[in-house]
Amino acid sequence: MPTTLMMRSDATGKLDLVVQAGAGGRGTLAVDTTLATSGLLALQCDRRADPDDTLPNDIALLPAQSGGLLARRGWVGDILTDTRFGGRLWLLARGKYDEMDRLLGAAYADEAMASIRAWWGVTVTVTAALAGRNTLQIGCQIGAVSVSRTVSAAA
Image 1 (cartoon, rainbow, N blue to C red):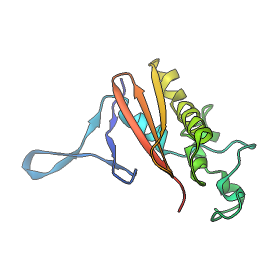
Image 2 (cartoon, helix red, strand yellow; image 1 turned 180 degrees about the vertical axis):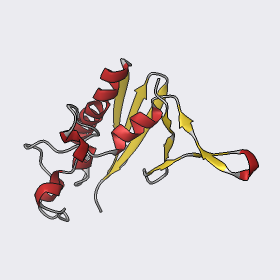
Image 3 (cartoon, helix red, strand yellow; image 1 turned 60 degrees about the vertical axis):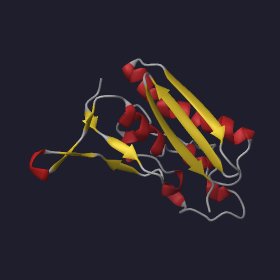
Image 4 (cartoon, rainbow, N blue to C red; image 1 turned 90 degrees about the vertical axis):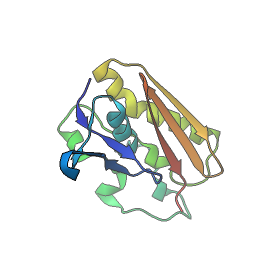
């Protein structure tokens, strides 16, 4: 299994490094030997939108994002590798959620977990549930580890 710096998600969904108590009152960065941090990063990072994806700024009456090259987001390192990192869950931050958005959320999360599934040869189960009028709850079971992300409509 991997050895990476451990990250945790806070109540707002932002990731932060975990500091553990150390000798002499000094903290040290925690190490994660599971796939939890990899799963959190895959769910939280934005994958570049496909050319046929509808961007949130393409929908009338919603605040526009920056246009041009940056509008499709994504990680610049994707051009150096043969894989695409992250998920397209950010495309769903455009309005009220319905059953179609729940299904898209599950598909986008499954797409984000594909590299973990392929690289480590583990089973990944993805769930998506409507958790209120403007909230979608994504959950992923990676072997014995669970990670989740809450996706909310843009304000």
